[in-house]
Image (cartoon, rainbow, N blue to C red; front, side, top):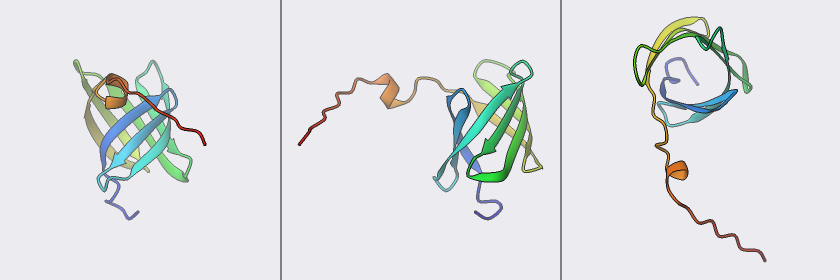
Length: 102
């Protein structure tokens, strides 16, 4: 990917230790995460690219807003997010899975 093509449109928290970034071009990229210093700092790395690193200070100003300031590959960035929970169909609707065996 060339510089400028890796803008995030979504940050999906998969659970402790992992998240998925959805890039502007639609590609999903799994990253490893760790939270430190009283849940006020976020560290991210990519097992597919050992050089990719992100470090953020996390601020929760109100309700569902999340502000992150830090660096991605030593480039200063500021990210503003709006948290959503329970909005995924697979976790909020009822599904029947049918498996057939031959």
